[in-house]
Image (cartoon, rainbow, N blue to C red; front, top):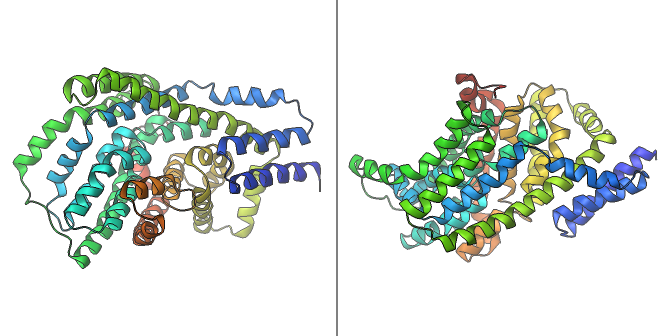
Length: 435
């Protein structure tokens, strides 16, 4: 073996072994990188330099603000209001509460930007509510966790910011705009399978549609929904940068949660900030250690080797696109989202662009693949959260998830092979390659 191939083997094998041994992912990445650098006899100061470089980014300053905004709004009593708005929109349909669950996740995802937060906040309300109305517990859990992935696509999503920073030169505003239609496609596909199963099992409808009630719930929820307008419209219109809009949204969320909805006290604010610090610490250590791992991959020319290996299988762009999705889906089953974004983007993004996939479209594909991974064993964090809330064995929930997996994959293929789904809004607003 050459020095390079041995170093690559040390880096990748040690990383995979530690992942399989259930080491914390940040430690797995850092130790594998340290072993690789030591083998190459590179100065270990490289490790600290690359870690600092990984988090020395102005764009990344938006991440703690988005996380704080989501926690404040999630703790501020908006979950029930968004559920009521969703019920007024779609509760009249067959399997009404399942439809409400999916639409509420679309609304709430635009505030929290997190599948875990969506499941934890809405799931504790939705799952018992559905069970009380005669829905099967496993079905209610499956609907809740699968719809939570919408929150990772609908802006503002801090994962989109991480991807934009890692990919380089990609507008956060274009990624925010690109997420709306794919999120709607995913919601639509989940509503189709929920309707089919509800019809088959005889799940009930809700109250008849009322325009008056819809208007009432919309007026109540407008304060929460306005936080999304501050972020998205502010960035797209060029009024704020992503970081500035996120900071303003945090202040707005604080005011709404305490003084408008009155679901949060100042004591609760300190508890919410404590949650934010815990989450942010995990995210930043992952970003810093993954940057070292990415440095090792780049210096060892792993992206070039991977590109040659994939294109060596087939030159057909459709086959390559499917292979990229399969790689990301498999990684999503064993790793968390942030390290997948940070580690694979330098490797797979050039391959995607070489077959004509726009970097913005690839970002949506990447996030959805990772979202599906959060619902799959053995490491699916959202799957564990949903099972815990419902107090159901994970195996039972996974069995109920099978039709939802199929329809989520269909949505993924639509997003992969129809670029306009992701790019239509950025194109229409003239924001492709924008600010």
